[in-house]
Image (tube, rainbow, N blue to C red; front, side):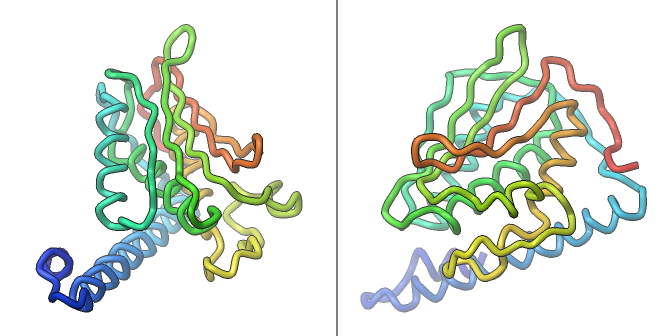
Length: 209
């Protein structure tokens, strides 16, 4: 809260606002790291991630997440292509965790000055698809083959990101798998694309157990 106040009420030089932005960014990063370590611990111990499913408007959820990301990182352009309504039976908090991770990866690994695209649409026969696209070089084959593994070489050769993709993609994979869906990486026309597919009737499961 204090960091957001500093961002909003920064002095004329902008130094206070930038300080608030850095505090907010560091705090968010620490929260994500703690959450990932706790999730990893649950998965490795066999406790799994308990999913609480409810009918959710994914378009509204994604719009909120993009708005939050745009506020936190005003130098990054995020564009959306979302239907007016896209309902699915999901654990909204966990799907939000997946999407935040994908947008964070796009922000860190994307080519500066190019927008990040967040898209979603209904699948034939029901279910939903979500995709996050960013302009970047393709991920090296040696890394791409283990992107969703908990133990992998995390560096992508991007000097702007010192920690690679970390545990986030593994946890995202487990969350999506728990919904009965899948998550995949592709390279399309100069864009790194991460796609999530959620079936029409996911059953609440405990993944990793």
